[in-house]
Structures are given as structure tokens and as C-alpha cells.
Length: 575
Ligand code: ARG
Image 1 (cartoon, rainbow, N blue to C red):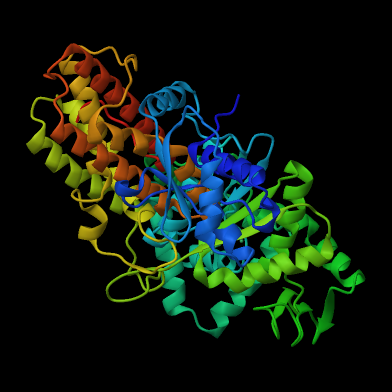
Image 2 (cartoon, helix red, strand yellow; image 1 turned 180 degrees about the vertical axis):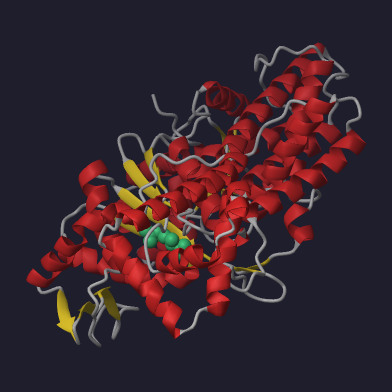
């Protein structure tokens, strides 16, 4: 049976009372009760009566009084009171809180509502262009996308993580020309993608008109199936995937599908034909375009999406339309999420709108989750300019810094353990540093900010989890939650905080903002650490106190562990 969360339960009590008191709940949309800002006002607050009063243009305070007078008794509720202009405040019952937390942490989903049960989401993220190394500019899509993936899975969604790699396009003609002119075979054998990148950059700085024409010819040959160029192209892709997978392995990222742009080539002519036949696309100077007039939808007025060029080549948007068709036919998803930087906002608006007209009634909720740019203090990064920070180098540097700290702080761990801790801390720090900021702001990359091990960072969270496990080891505790209860303000605050896990997951997912979930996990660590500072656990005054507090330590570890699973941070029992 699904657990009724406290915010829903309290709202239900208010709505039922409103009904008894003769008010029409239909006047305002349901809004769950919210935790109060100040414990002086109880634990939770409902503004339902206030909103009803406003909707009826009467005194909301009087409405709240009438409703409050007939709220039914419930074991969850210790007391209610009307406050301010018409809020109803709830003080919850301690044994109910403890029992509720017990149910939550014994549940395999840790009480997270399985609202995605039976629903499918395709998440298109990371999606780098091949033949270049991944640099820190690719980090955000990879990490934010992977966390949206984990948030959905935690709520029971069937997730198809699809890496839509850029494995097709004009860069291959350039690479082939550069390869034929300048390849250093020994360098390629040693470091394939490094050599490809060198060739690409060299082409960029040396190509003249003649070489550019050659590059176009090589692209055309590749696209018409020339076996030699096709073999080279395959080699480029394979080398790239080896490199990408190294990054993904380190960062805990896995995909269900890697269907690159090239996968959709065979159907692109049909896509264009179909759009033309339906009058959605039109010829324009020998090209084929989808056009939005001045009365077009918001953000699209007077814009154009080219789906076929004069020379017959298909484009990024054409592929994306074919991709949507494939996703619908293959997975019939309820939702498709694209995770890219802010510069692709117009692109996805155009693609989504064209798709809507092309395949009305497709039943998919299309979302573009964009994020701000990651820039270096000196400006934008570009492989061509050579001023990029490679993602693998970032990971290595982070792990190295973590290792220095571990060596200093944990001399008792053996060498292997220290290496494992450093890897977990270093990679966790990178993921968390990215996730914990508002995705939509631009971020200036600095090593120190990215790799900080103090304050609101993954290592701080990881230490809090390890502390739970260390207390249990020292106290020979079994890791059971028997004796769970609530006594005193610090225990109570901790229980209330742990009970909010499910709401935090739901909010971060619907807002597409993993940073909101980071806030929750950080606050949980803070509240736990405060409890641990203020109350003695192993040396508690009575046996009952000790048992109750040890049960709370175990409950905290389970909630933090679930949070880490979602953020992609490893829970270490010792560090
Ligand atoms: N390869 C693109 C880039 O590097 C991102 C692809 C995003 N996904 C998509 N279906 N368009 O900018």
C-alpha cells in the first residue's frame, strides 16, 4: 500500500473538515500542507482555508476558525491552531512521527512515492560529438542528465537513457582530409582520440578553400557509402567511444542506448517528403524549410528550421524529428527529456512544434531541460582554440586532491582502501559541485571551486554518512531501527527532516532541478550533525535513549544512502 505523505494527509484532513463546515473545496485547487518555517507555529501549515476565504471574498480567518473547529481527530495530529490571516497549523504527534519514519525506512523505496510506475521516459543526455575528447563543457549535460535519470528511476519510472552522439556531419570530411595528409600512425596507436583531435585542430588552422572543397567531397563520399571512408569513420567512432566510456565509468554514468545521429540517416528522405506532403515544410531557394510566420507561437515567430540544404544534405533538426518518430515507435514514452545547454532552446522549440504538427496526438510530453554555460575565467572553451579542460583530466585532478586529504586524515586505512576512498570522494565532489548549483545559471569554472572539499560539498555529505556507520561500529550496533522514537527537539528535528525525502525527490524532479535535491541532502546532513553534537548516542543516560538514538542513526544512514544513490555519490562506511 502506498504511504500517504504527511503533507497530503494534513491537506485531506482540512479539506474534509471544510466540506463538513459547508465550504466548497472545488473553489481552489488542492495544495498540500507545507512545513512551517518556525517551530513556534507547529510543524506543518495548511493555507487551504485562507485560499477558500479569499476565493469567497470573505474573511479568511473566520473560515479557518470554522474549519479548525471540525477537523477530525487523527493519530498523526497532536494539536491544531489558527494563525495569522487564516492559516491552520499542525503539531504532529511524536509516536506517529516515529512510526511513519519506521514505515519509510523499512520500505524498499524509502517511502518515495512510485508515481512513475507504468510510465516510460526517454532521457537524451551527454550526447557529445565524436572525434573530440569530452571537455568540461560536456560535464553538465552528462551529470545533470544522469541525475534526472536517477530521480525518475527512484520514483518507479522506466527510464531509457539514450546517448544521441554526434557521429555524423561535415567534420568527418575534414578529419579524413587531415588524416590522409598528416596522420602520425604511432601517435594514433598510442592515443587515438588525442591524435584525431590534433588532426581536427590542425585542419581548422591550416585549411584553405581548396582543402575545404576536398573536405566537402570526402563528406559526400562518406555519405554515399564509399567503403574506404566508411571504414575510417567507423574507426573514429570506436576510438571516441572508448574515450567517452572512460569518463562515464568514472562518473557512474550508464546508458541504455547509444543511437547516434547516423542511425537515423536511412529515414531522413522520408521525413522530409512527409513534412512536405503535409504542407509543414516548403521549398525555399532550393532548400527545404519549416517556417513560422509573424503570428507563430511564442519564441518561434519569424524563425526558420532548415531540414534539407540546397546540396541535398540533411540537418540536425531533420535527425531530431526522425529520432522522435523512432522513440515513439520503439518505447511509446510518456515523456522525453533533452538535456543540453541554453544555446539550443530555439532548436528544441522548433523541433517540438514541427513534431506536434507532423504527428498530432503522439501522447508524449516533450521537455527541454537547458542549463547555463560553463565558462573559463578567460571566456568560452573551444577545442579549435585548444583552451579546453578535459573531463578526464578534471576527474584525475579531483581524485589526486582527494587522495592528499585521505592520506593526511586516514593514515589507518591501507593503500587500496585509500585509493578507493579518493576515487569515490574525487568523483563525488565533481558530480555534486555541478549538481548543487542552479542549473540555469552560468558557471565560471575554477579548479578550487570545483574541487573544494569543505562546506556544502560531497565530501561533507560523505563524512556525515561515514559518521553514522562509525557510531554503529563503535557501539556494536546491528543497524536495526528497533526502538525508533522521538524525544527532545534535536531528535524531533531529525525525524521531521528524514520524513521529507519523498517530497524532496518529487519537487526536484518536477522542477527539473537536481540542486533542490542537493539542498535536501545537505540539510539532512546538517540536521543529523546537529543532533549528534547535542545528544549523546553511545553514552546516553539510559538504555532506552541509547537504543532510540541508534535507531535514528540507522534511519539517517538509510535516507542519506538513498540520497547518495540519486546523486551518484558512493556511501562509504569508512573514510
Ligand atoms: N550533439 C549535440 C551537441 O553536442 C547535442 C545533442 C542533443 N540531443 C539531441 N537529440 N539533439 O551539441
